[in-house]
Every structure is written in structure tokens, then in C-alpha cells.
Image 1: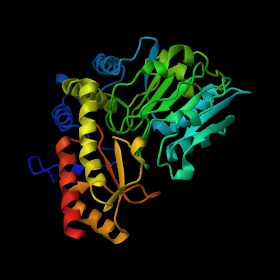
Image 2: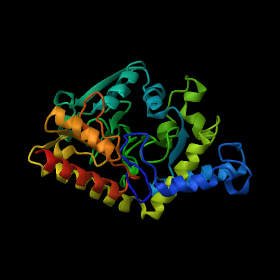
Image 3: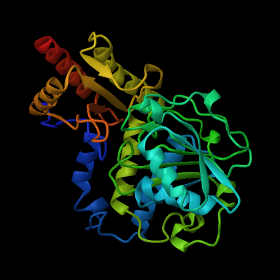
Length: 365
């Protein structure tokens, strides 16, 4: 437990840590937002007050992430999981295939949904290696007639992350960036669509951000339900139906916080420092700790590792919990340990875990 503010050392994989400054501001404004006599959760999404909050969040996202003007920014609901369905429903037309690059469970789920609408293909996969690494570019063969290529930029369960993305040429590239969006600068122009659930780096659960090239959206199928068309939301500034108003407000406040921290270049540098603190302990432990991901594919967001033996691993997790570390259990499908060091996880929290890991090894080796 961080005694300075009695906050847990929060390594939850999602919903995950939020900036303390943002939480405190939301607490101050919760009951009476901008002297309106109402909470932001109580006011109409058609009101001028909320419209300003909504549009400022879009403006800050475009500015911070350097999103070109020929891209739409949408705030949707249903999480990234709904996007697994909406994408093929909108873009996988009859007679077309879509290529999926398999790097973990979320790639598998996206691929499974696409099979309901057409004939997706797996053009690369590291499943045989327990998803320990990202495919190399020479393993990826894109069909120039594909409707799109889909990648998952960061794999929370296995702790792997793309450092560079494949050049798909004229074939649209779509990325699920739910767990590393805005953790570093990205060249948006390489993608036709990026989507992300907010609950790891952007805010609380409930908001899904979609960033899509306008001319790509114009190619979508039209014979699908209204609420599931991207054009419906683009034409109404994401206000076709009642949006997750509190989530959008919080997203805007997190974006302000990123601005105050120096933007994405500064955030990226700190994320590298945070991850290094923990990876260095793993690498210098002489096998007491072992990482799941191959070094060249390691994620800066989700650090996955095992302890020397299963009994010690359970003791490690138990003692860590007693010491105030939350969320260190690995995903149930792979076990082990996982430290999720998203943007809002302070450097001091990662340093505390690094120190705890060193002390635990010294005591038990």
C-alpha cells in the first residue's frame, strides 16, 4: 500500500488504474458539475454543457494522437468485443476475404466473429509457440484482394506487443489497440481503423474509441442494422443514441492529464522506464523469475512472468497481496504473474514492485 495516499499498488489488467489527479477532480465535480446543480451523469447528452465536454474530448484526442482531419473519431459502446462483430459486418463483403494475424486470445475472438460474416483467413500465427512472440514481417503474406488485415497491437494475456506494424499496401489495416492506445506516438496514417476499449489507458470502462479513415467508412455495407453502421455514428457526432456521458467526461480528463504530463513522447518514455524496472529484475534473477514473452516481443503494458516453482509462485502472489499489490495474478488461461503498467500506473508503483521482487528472491532463493 502506498502510504503517502493510502492507494493500492494497482496492476489490474482492466479496468485498470486511473490518474489520482483525475479521480480527485471527478470527485470534486461529481455532484455539481460547473455550477449546473447537476452531476455530469444527470444532464442531457443534448445539452450545451455536455456537448462542450464531448467535443473537447474529441479535440484533445485528435491533437494528442496526431489524428489527421480525414479520420472520424467515434465514441461507441459495447467494448472492443462489439467491434469484433461490427468490423466484418460493415466491411467483409460477399466474395471477399479478410486476413487476421493471430497473436493471442483477443485475435482469436475477433477471428471467430468474422467467420459469421464471411471467409476470414489466418495469415500468420504464433499460437504454436504459446503466443510468446509477434510474427515477423516475412511470415505475413497479404492478399491484395483482401477486404482488410486485422492485428491486435498489444496482447494483455501473453505480454507481447507490436513495435512496428506490417505495411499492407492498398489493403486496409485495422488494429485493436485496446491495451496500448496512446501509450506512445503512432503514425495514424498507416491504419484505416484503430479501435480501443477505454478501460486500460483512456478512462473507465464503458467507452470505445474508434478512429477511422472517412473514405474507408464510405465503403461499408449499407444493408445492416442502423445502430451497427459506423456511418450512423459518424453522421451524428456519436450522439445517435445516449452515449456513456460520464465515461466520455472521464476520458476527456485523462486526455488533459496526458497533456499536462508532456504528451505522448513523455508518456512513452515513462512507460519504458516503468517496464524496465520490472524486466531488469526478471532478467537478472538467474532463472528465479522467467518472462513468458520473447524479449524482442515484450510488452511495455503487460509484463508476464513465472516464479521458480508453483508453490513459490503462490507464496509470491499471496505475500504481494498482503503488501498492497493488486492484480498480479496472470490470466486464468496461462497462469503465472502479470503486472499491467498502463499509462496511469505511477513509476513509484513499478519501483515498489521491483523492490518487492528483489526482496522475495533474496529471501527464498
